[in-house]
Image 1 (spheres, rainbow, N blue to C red):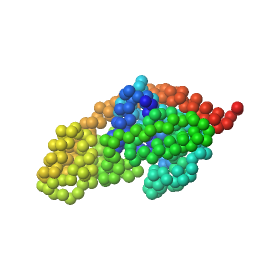
Image 2: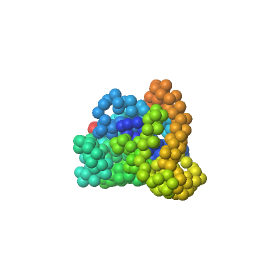
Image 3: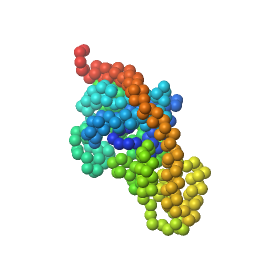
Image 4: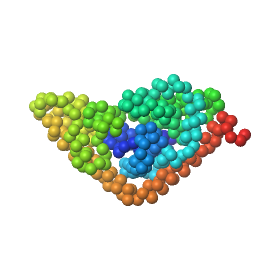
Length: 321
């Protein structure tokens, strides 16, 4: 099965990215044909600093490699190195109804957060459809909150197939129901745009500040605690089933202080990411090797995407007949 997924380089990756995207994505490189891309074109809707975009894009590549991406098994590439994607996006945009774009949850959410309503933000789902369809995948691993993007890509592909002839596979959203939305330190979904993240590879003092700032309630130490609190949801990500059962029993029995739970969570976060941090630092010392991984990745991706685009052009009557 061929799978495809990507991450925007708009900030340092965090615990929510790790458990919500990287871990389930990278599990799919075993036994599947896995494609991962760094969506630097998409970052242009919110990030205007060119040097920062390059730095963060390189950082996402380091994060993938640190978290276990195997370049021999999986394909990792930079979106902007794949020119066929943007040409396909234009072709698809001529078939995409305005109403479909107006219903996009991500567009509504970002407007609500104060981002300017430019064309790039509005047309985001078309470029995302091109990202997906150009690789001709069978499935796209996404969280439940991102399912709409895959459904929109399917709708756009089906419209192309209807108007010009069968070409694009309709990929399925691959949703792992057991991967819940990772809560941020304020209880909302962990997101860079909310400023509620626990960073993966920041300095220890920054990680400590984030963990110790997790919002709780005013329940006294001796009283039972609600297991549904974000603190315990986050703690559970770093524990096995037996540890979760024991901690839940302590919390619901009373006598457990939130401060003690936060200190234990901090120790687990630091211990979990320490070997990944070392691997990331090793790759960071070899930037040319990272670029070689990306160059080989886009070569593999274009080997699939270029013929697909050529056929789309032929079906549409573009270029020399």
